[in-house]
Length: 340
Image (tube, rainbow, N blue to C red; front, side):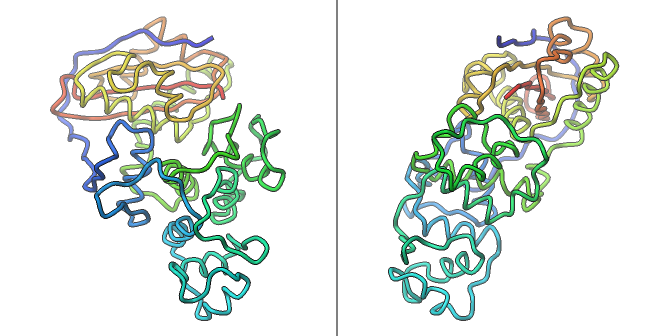
């Protein structure tokens, strides 16, 4: 059964800097869009680009040659000196083909190897194929723990099942009931998957996308309260923290304080919109508190918030903290709880 915390806030003002906005824009990508963060961060890194008409094409299907280009940029792969020889294994691309250097680079790296002597550059890629490409390309298995997340794999091709499992284990996907493996991948989805994968590997470490010290301290304080009561500590979930941060930013930008967002709807609607799959979930919000200690104390002094923090059914937590001097409360805190 889903649960939410009650509303609580302290009218304490602080003078902190506002959240900065991205300096790259696409005419079809809005801040509230599910894949906005991944698209904008990778665009700023020069890994992805839009079209000449100013659009990104979020819902356009991704082709194999496009994936080759984005991965070669993300991984800083250099084209081999013998491009023609590297591409000899394919009969449909050569050194004069569009994106020959990038295709040769990912081939030499062992990320792509084609099928029946063909690279099929303009063929669209499925979600399960994407899983294999990312796991192999970014060596994601090196970042796994020994615990397998429970994910439905019956409809996944056996050649891709292990890689889909890896994405689930790392929290890169939370579509655990149905990964939709045979569905064609769209550009927005690939941007999010690549962005989350690069954060896991440490390839993206900019302070604007990493978990803040304040957010980490909130998790530590929450787990201290749980351990005192012989409860298992919660595992911090990077994507859930991204979502919590998005909710806090939404409250600041749109001048409201509520579990129901005018942009995303309820916390549970929001989680589903961003491809989270969960059995139970909850949310605590607060505004105006000066520090992690103060906000956790406020939550612990409120029965509804305390119940979420000490809920033995939750396994993961995400925390989002945003400061904005132009908004009424100046500081906004969101906790999201989840059991996949």
